[in-house]
Image 1 (cartoon, helix red, strand yellow):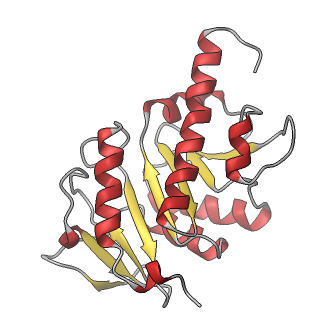
Image 2 (tube, one colour; image 1 turned 30 degrees about the vertical axis):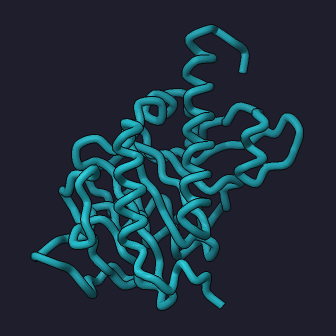
Length: 211
């Protein structure tokens, strides 16, 4: 049985989430995108080029799992990063909501990555991301930022087919963080915890700490 939340129109919650992330400085201008998957595996995603603090229900486009537009208002076009959402939904059955934001700390932490991975700090916060170990060694996948977003999605598709990340997130270098979850609250929770890890890493580097 699908959660009741997914049987309802998720656009109001998506718009509210965008306003919150805008206030945090994570979705300034028209940056970032959000989506929610429906029971038929189509999903609502933010329309391209819309300011995230002013979204209404008309600023979302419903697409199928192949990216074809099913519903759109006023000739809206789906986000250019729809292909990335499609890859995540295809590989992670538990992913029903996806949030992609552009924070300063996420972009700084991309520079700390090695061989396509960012080692997350072994903090208590990782338990909220499904890692219960003491002193865990957890790598977040990091992908290069390419002009052709579809090419980023191809690389994600190949990596997720080869290796399932331990945490529900991925970073695009000099671009931003994507996190997902089974509902809006879980996706936001995962996003917040990863952003906390990024802030920790940036500050630890500035203080020349070992972690």
